[in-house]
Length: 271
Image (cartoon, rainbow, N blue to C red):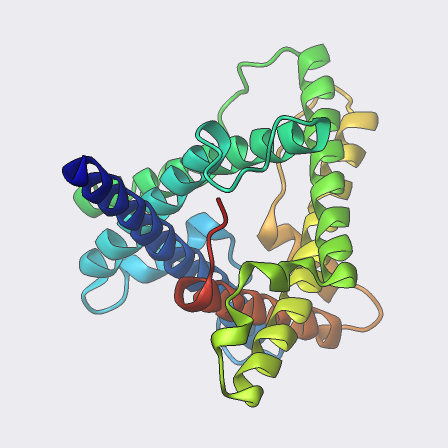
């Protein structure tokens, strides 16, 4: 009986370590994204990069292959944690309508980060093909493509709004061992990074949602393509506020990255 209990505790600790590694990797992606975009906003170098461009950026750095291996492994860990949240429900989210929606969203998030992690790891062994621009023809027919764009746009809109709701309610603070942090400045920093990061992520997600919905409702059967983080930054940069709004949102994404690092350090697990 004692052996079984010890085995369970060990398994739980392994799951937590997988989650911690995933939070750290996700934090690295958002921090680098925000820093590069902030620099680009004020013509200080950098670039308006999405997640896949971040992988290309890291590959070009000293010890780039090692960085990709660490990042890719961490992103796969984050994907595994999302799958565990979705299937095993270790934090007792439950099977209510709200719980099911959250668990399905966790599973979809896991698929996205699993793909990103695998891409990073595979990129270690293969040289990038300069002739591939990702502009191949879609396997979706015109009508299905309309539905796909609209469905993704609506899902992203819901996700973006949810980020604002989380920031407004402050619910995200319940996921931390705030009481165990004796330094009041550190507590305040986690709150500030969380609020700023969630709002900036919500803005970016809603802009990308707008791209998808616009493409879906105005689909002409042409070469409409998916737009992501890079195009969202361009959208912010091209408005009347110029670089300042883009720089502000980019700084917010850095805050979100730091907020993820705080998860890797202080996250508590219910259930």
